[in-house]
Length: 129
Image 1 (cartoon, rainbow, N blue to C red):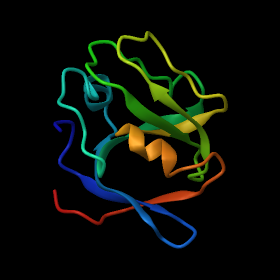
Image 2: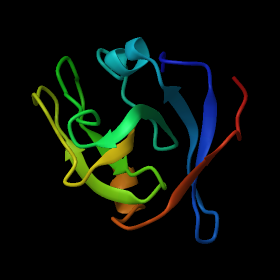
Image 3: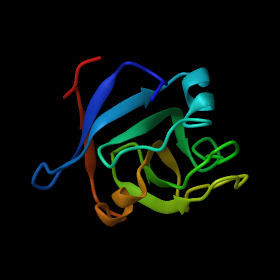
Image 4: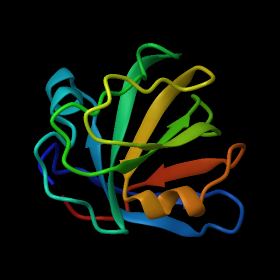
């Protein structure tokens, strides 16, 4: 994974269950633009956390151009509540959340089985850079 050296851990608030232990922060234009384009497939414990300036549907939309594999896309609002999730397939022009979102997690498709719409997630600094 290439976007940033910042690793965090995603936790489900209720019970503190670790969902991803290697989450790379994408909080600049270039890291968000690059995303997972032309990258190797992710393992089940890694993903990307996209952070946007404001909470809305269009800013948090993603594309799957130049992708070679499907991913889980999980959208969260500013409070960390999951507002939408989808299996995003390669070469699709756009996926937008059903409700406004401030964060998007892109991860291995197995994440879709571990999160539900309405779950509250938190991010902590659990890893080294």
